[in-house]
Each structure stands twice: as structure tokens, then as C-alpha cells.
Picture 1 (cartoon, rainbow, N blue to C red):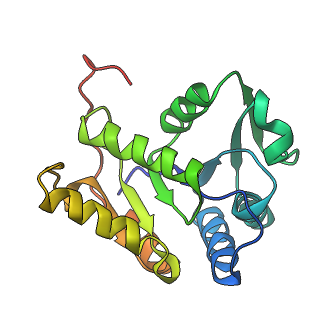
Picture 2: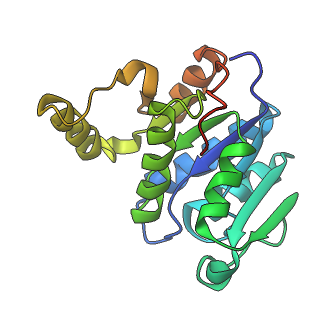
Length: 194
């Protein structure tokens, strides 16, 4: 992708996870910064969210956090970011994250990460955007989800071109390769609203 200047990372806010996931978050944040790519994320300083942001900042990168006011204390806002936007709702947060990003990387996470991931996937399927989406299947974390998507397709509940909708990378180096190889987005259908 020739015009990649910012990447939105969706990931968990829990610190009670395997070290392999923490290492992946660190490698992603560091790698984005070293490539001059701005990180856009949920604005927290705990769990994988905090790790990816701290790694990007430590490598000299720019980091934009977007956090709703009602979960500032739960996700513990990161106060050392390049920009921190405190917004009025989850809907505003998710829309702003999409607007400020050229591509999306989905690291392991919980229900909130699933919510963000499925929304950005659905919006792409509906042609509301055409930005690359990379599912980082670190240590096989997303394998059950990918199996569920295959099941939905097999059962006729989803008709998707997986290669157009998203890419899967099993390690962080592969995430960067997928981002570099992604075609530049086409213009979305402006008659449709997110």
C-alpha cells in the first residue's frame, strides 16, 4: 500500500494474557513507529493497548488515542500520547478511529475487540470503506473465529470474498508484509453513511 500513514490497532485491555501476545503488541507498536506509521488505538494504558502504545512512543512514533469518557477509569487513559481524544460514546470512538486510519490490525482481545473488528469488517463488506484489514492470528488466537466465519459461509449466512475483506497474518512480520502488499483503497460509496 503506497499511501499508508496511520494504522488503527484493535486489541485487548487485559494484562492477564500470555507473554506471546504482549510480545506481539510490543513488536507491532515498535514496527509501526520505525516505519513512520502513526498508531491509532483506544487510548488506554493497560493490557495490550498500553503495550502497543508504549512501544510506539519509545521508538519515536506518533500515537493517537481515542477513549470514551465513561470508560476512562476502566481502561485507564494513557496520558503520554501524541494526541488523546476523550469522546462522548463508543460510537464516536469507533467512527473516529476509522476516519483517522488508513488500515486496521486486529490483535488478540476480548469482546470489545470483537465488536470493533466485526464493525470494521461489516463496514468494508457494505462498501463504506475499502481500507486493508489484517487479522493478527498470534499463536492461533483467532483460529476459532476464522473457523466460525468459514462455517457462516458454508451455511449460506455470509457471502464474502475473504481475500478482499481481510488478510490473516500469523506473526507480526507478516502483518507488515500484508500491509505493504495491500492495494490502495478505492473510494467508498459516499452515498452510504457509516
